[in-house]
Amino acid sequence: MKEEGGLHAPAHASHGSKGHAHGGTHTPVFTGDRRRQLDELLTRYPNKMAALLPALWIAQEAEGWVSEGSMEEIAGLLELTPAYVKGVVTFYTMYHQHPVGRHFIQVCTTSPCGVCGAEDVAKAFLKHTGCGELGVTSADGKYTVIEVECLGACGFATPIMINDDFIESVTPERVPEILGTLK
Amino acid sequence: MGYPHKSHPRETPVLSRHFGDPEARTLAGWRQRGGYRALEQALGMAPADIVNVVKESGLRGRGGAGFPTGMKWSFMKPGDGKPHYLCCNADESEPGTFKDREIMRWTPHALIEGCALGAHAIGAETAYIYIRGEFTEPIKVMEAAVQEAYRDGILGKNAMGTGKRVDVHVHRGAGAYICGEETALMNSLEGRRGNPRIKPPFPAVAGLFGQPTTINNVETLAAVPHILTNGAQWYKDMCLSSPKSTGSKLFSVCGNIRKPGNYEVTMGFPFKEFLYDLCGGPLPGRKFKAIIPGGSSVPIQTLEEAEATLMDYEGFVAQGTMLGSGGVIVFDDSQCMVKQIARLARFYAHESCAQCTQCREGTAWTTRILERIEHGDGTMEDLDTLLEIGENMTGKTICVLSDSCATPVFSGLKKWRHEFEAHIKQKRCPMRTAVAA
Image (cartoon, rainbow over all chains, first blue to last red; front, side, top):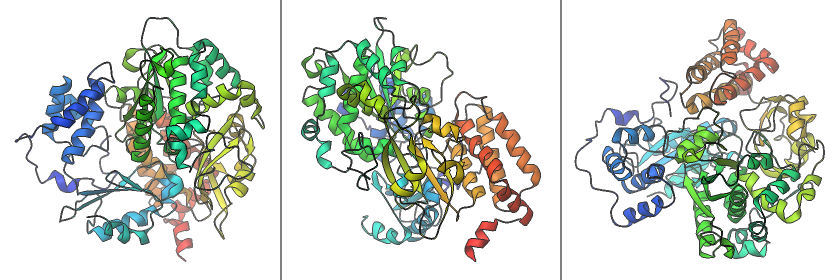
């Protein structure tokens, strides 16, 4: 999605300056089962490009984020340019362009949840994870907390996601208990 | 069965009948509940006959636009020698809307049946269900159900033993509200950035992969098997007001209300009874203040307007708004309208694909000005500027995201102008102080 020039909290701000080594050694993602999974996906579409979003999901599940190496690998497999793949990756909010905490916590704060106290839920996560600030990964690498726009579960305010787990009706009081279940 | 509440006797549970019932998720359970009989019947019918039944029923698109479904299907020309595609729009991202999520979580086979049936009706062999990336549970449930349907021979090259090919694939999105716009959805499915396309050409002429395509919402497709089974007249008879609005409709209810959740009522149901009886009315000690009845993109109603509304396409228009997606967002008297409208604008600013200037700049400017007013730093001129920007954001862009950002600003300044002026005059949010005190 678009860059908004300061409209938002600095998502991923802490990563930008660290200068992750890009273009170094990349261990191929699409081998064995993952390669077979991609080959099966390719049978569903009339061209290879349509498998781009699913391929990026496979890469993110394998590596925890979508690295430049993954983008290049996928570009090669789907006969696209790495620049094209990066252009697509940067459009969608769910692909991580940097490593994130082991538990990636997304708190919905859009209006319907906002009027039910979602901002306090986000604050509670920032406090109890030690992240302190939205988009910043905790020092131990365990958590990243962000606010997310409408998760589509507005009747169950406040919904949150921790990686792929969707949790409904979260209140600030439930936050320590939820964090206690994470390793 | 309702979800998460038991069905209210005044509801009309057609699509929601099996919400909350885990057995309905399985193929065996779905068949026991009458599933896949409509598909079997439809696969033996000529596509044009199915289109006629759907036309006759009066079914209109449940995603937001309300376009007649049978007419949309009739735009797909049979025998043109091109591959046709059906896309099911399961990108449900309109704030306040969470009905498609429940259809997919509880009755995945209802959607598969609707997709297969729709595909046959428009001469397509392939249907893609594009589900928003955050819907991890619906995706899991849908994928498992699709696999079951393939194993059972319902889908595949010899669907239900009819010799017809019907493939259904689940495709996961990756976080972008705009991909619920039909042409953006097609771009995303093709592996592109989700920018909306200029129309024409319309999808029925050149859609997914450049081929004739129909895009239907989850709720629309899930309703079709019921229409085939029970007949067009049965569906048409579900009508309490305007004859142009037929059938049952799921409304998602959220915000400051006692019993948030999904409710299914016959078209034309009185909104006042819906809000106070079915949904339990306001929270203790509170009063309703403002209602957004059709997802965040439709005009905001005052309580008086909402209480006078009959819940169908024409009824909402008569009270200055739209049925939209049926996502009802309720604000009570503890909420500051300036803050709420600013928050909605921020949503659109975040979700703008940035393709059109009016939207890219307009959504961000609108947000900054509204937040400035909310924090007590606004001026009276800001109110004129907001209206001027809003005019420039309406009807001038490729899709309507820009218009959707301007809509609550217009409603707000028309109906709650005194709240904006109070922020400016007092240089602070009067509500915030009042609530704190």
